[in-house]
Length: 429
Image (tube, rainbow, N blue to C red):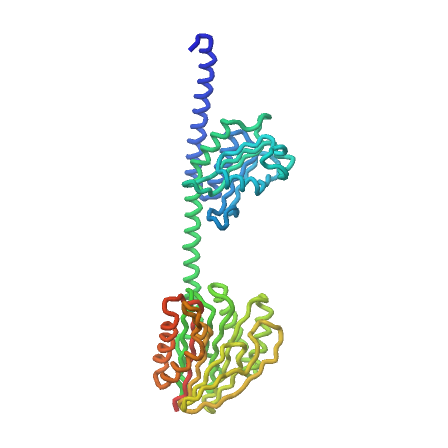
């Protein structure tokens, strides 16, 4: 070492050591501040604020992105912090695209004339940009970007190194906080779904009604925790019982809410309507005005007069129920009209059938007939009829089990794609 250079070298070494101490102080303070933060948003705000102070920048932003290949570049979350009165700067998509390709720190001290981003509208207020990747095991989860270095010369190598260190130390903390919050939200959603399932279960009949001369059974198996199928028994008078089975559009929680709306509507209108067709007209109008255009429901609505042994019904776009006579002949109950809620007004019709001892009425949802196996084959009515004919003398519980078992044998290992509901009624004497 030449004697003449010693003071200069010592001064440079002192600057380097001072810079290292400052960087360690920044990282130490950042670690303490992050440890005291309560959620991911507060963590990211803290990181951005400390980063602005560390590199003397005006504004900063953390952008989290989707990491899978199909949606790479899709922004999940953006946290922006500014130390000035400037409006929030918007990072161009090209900057995020560059980071996906290169995953290295990027310094731009003359954005308007940078050849790498020619034609990109940066905005006149942006003088300099420093962007570093947030990565976990080489996987890009986001970026940390700061704008407008206080010094006129722009961001330097020391700024780039320090911000890269901050990003490296912060990435896993941010991801852990985000995943923890996602898990909490998922657990809360599971709890809410379980509560919705119990509420929906409470809306369904606890047991079939006792009607002299008749056996009645209703059973449902949702495809999910909550479902969109609905069945009900409504006693209008000592000699009149309403039996209905509906299927609302959609699945899961939205379908369960629409199902509850349908049940309340049908129950309310049943007591003031002149008959099944009138009840469907009234209910259709109410559902049309209380649901969005893509929401609708199919419904079979039957009024049983068990003293006269007649069933007056209206089928609003539902799967055709089957009537199996004692002699084994099969007919369908089709009279009615369109699904409920599709059009404001529709001239629904009704029909009446007489029931003799041994006659069986089978009302079902399309989750049975449209149950599909791995080869794309539907269970269909043609497979259902032999099961019903063979088991029509069984108890209704055994007959329902036979139907469900036949559907299960058909689909084998294919997942249940739709709710399955069955309503059985047989005249005994």
